Image (cartoon, rainbow, N blue to C red; front, top):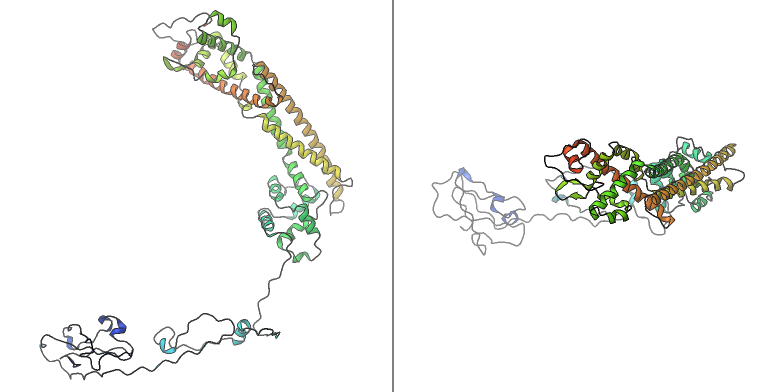
Length: 518
């Protein structure tokens, strides 16, 4: 106590500028013990500096020395001299040199500087001299006085200023055009095919035309581009690429692309529309001329009369037919005692009994209705209208300029004009042929609807009613074919539907006789 050293112990040695208060815990400043003796209890600091010579001090450089208190004496005296008591207060460290106030060249760079005495033992210790090009730094970062016109030159060349480009299109429009042109660049082959209206050029496919139609300049944009009289190299990239398109006139580049796209797709469009109209007309004509279908419908009338009117003579004398929509419900009309048997099975078995070859003939006669059911007339009418509109547009382009198509290449105008005139004549003839095909299909539909007791009161309803009839016939033909296969492969089913059906093998129990006509 009182600052004296404990027997056999040396006082702990503190690092300069550090002490228990700075280190926070006793372990942070481990003392060195002599002769491997047992570590004594932790020191007790006096509340008012008791046991610490001189007491505590407010100065960071004055560190207290701990005093040790033991409950008894040690087992012996340690070797060596007892260390002298620590001084009352450590000497104050010399204050560090303050960092001078920053005087930046221009705008201050945020960097907190550390004094040299703060970086001892760190990565910055013994900082070596580094060479700096002061001239370049001043030229780049030194702030020029306001109003000064002095042009400072340095050995370090300043970066080149970005050349300003001439922009003629709005930013949004320019971006959309560049997207299209990156997908389909304007190659020399594309530009030449457009200028010469070369319909056989491999560079202009339908896909290419579709992409470029969204990138060509509008009439207003083309006028702005043509009105530019400066150096084309000063234009922005998108305007520079569109400049050759803007110079194409009579017809414009948009009309040329439209013509080229129509020429590429004209034959396929005509072939598809004509094929679909032919399918509808053929299916309706086949159904109307089928003798097998007519016989099957007569059997259907008889079955419906027997089921609904119990074969009464009065009903048989009055009933002459039915709406064909009942054909679609025959496969769902099940026998109460046997859900495997439907009215469609009974119809097939009865037709089999009357003529074994009749079911096959019916299926063959109605084979074409399946394709017609997927080819409604209404969309074909729209396709024909669009085709005729394009044909009229091409004819107008060909007749709009008596001196021919405008081309920059010498002697190319005549050949381009001749190709356009030939296309106009061909498109006009194809449009007339499509109109005739449509009229023929509608006439066949009107006749079939009247034949099958499906009257149409308005001409505009013919297309929808024709599709309804084809779909109904397709559904009936499919159900009839399935029932025919089941009857042919199952003799018991055939016998349950009609005793005289081919291959019928009735069960031991007799099936009740049907009434007349059954």
